[in-house]
Amino acid sequence: MKSTVTDRSYVLQNNATLFDATLDEFSVRDFEAASLNEILKRSGFNKGSFYYRFSDKFELYAALLETVFSRHAELIKEGTKTIIDVRGVETSLTAMVSSIVRLHAMDPRHLALYGRLFDELGEHRANLLEILRSSPIERLLTDLSSLLSSEGVPDRDASFFASMARMTLYHLDRVAMIDGVWIDAASMAHAIIRSSFPDDSLLPRRVRDSAHIVPRLDPAGTSPLPFDLSFASGEIVALVGDRQAGKAALRTLLTGVLSPRSGEVRFLSPDLVKSGTDGFATVPSGIRLNRSPRWHLRQVGLKPGSERESGLLADLGLEDVADIRLDRLPDAAKTKTEFARLFASDAKVLVIDDALGGLNPDARERICRMLLKRRHVGNTIILYTSSMEEALGIADRIAFLLAEGVARVVSAEELNRKYGQKSIVVDYQEDGLAHRTRFPWDALSGTAFSEFIAGNRILGIETRAMSGAEIFKMETGAELS
Image (cartoon, rainbow, N blue to C red):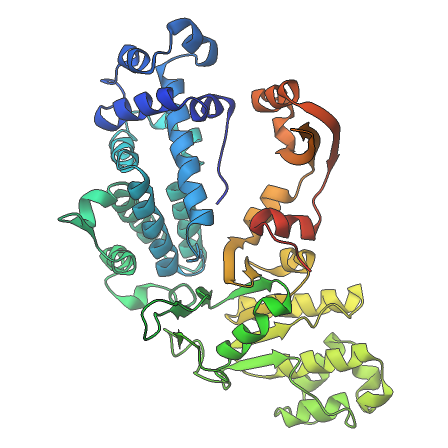
């Protein structure tokens, strides 16, 4: 999740004593009772300096909320491998509960502030509405409510679910901690859902179903499997990273060919996939080059001359070469035949391993449209690629793979929002060395950008969009090779 830094929160984040005094006051008193004079007294901040930066007490309160929301967003982004997955309600809530527990561990006053914020939402709703848009809790609940509504859950039930989840998450330390010990995050998420949907049948299958790969300690109790992912029905997940970073091992682990070294593969919904290779179709899967595209389709059960056979051949541009041996055709025809076999299968999970790169733009677009259709009917699609551009163009979520496992998982929407527009690239010198940093485009008129330019020796400034390799490095700190 994206963190939010405004000019007012920038001031607060860069003055530790003012932040501490402000958090102290607003975590124990409601907005009306909180004393601005007490905050200024404890922080040593004089009124002249305060009113130069803040218009009133509410703007200070807003800056505090933005700062805590930013910290929370960073914990979600960096502190866990569990996925915020808006296509799996329970997975999403589990990740959110886990992040709030870590926010409490950072400073218990954070959750005290959350609780008071919830209690004051009605009284200050109009003023808080804009600020709440950057709250990780509100953003997740908005996504989940929209998802439930789009899947046919009545608005009344979706709204009730959001209200129950909101009340629980903002008061998590009151409802999920017993004698100083937190209730398991997954159990808490399960309880939130069941309080709103006592009957499983009230949740749409596409929302309810999810498959998980979960870590488990090895017999020595110390080495968890370095992969922690969930895949939901009806989504496309792109895994981006060098093959040597573990893609091959993860793929064989998914298909059940290789038992995990120190973990388990667990598919929570038997209707989503079967254990082993039966529930998967992969590209590439190995085809016979001395046979034709039509022959390969018949091997996976399509009837000769059937409408489905003709449709697949036409959709993939193979109708004119359907009866020609593959060893007499270009490599692109072989790849298209692989995809024809994939789309002809009844597998619930489609695994694509770096198979789109060798196709021309028209063929890639055709296949991407077909993949999106399969996603729409509930297939799970796992796309292995070394191209960030390819991942951003089709995936719902992107997992960044490094040698030690999954570095992080982010929604493609979030990445496109974060990097889709041009940014300001600033080269500057510090201690005799050249450095480079970036600012979002809208920071051009902000205080933070102006202060940075004024306080550093600038070597150059330019505006440009990020490449896929640069996005990978920004998100992981590693090169995409």
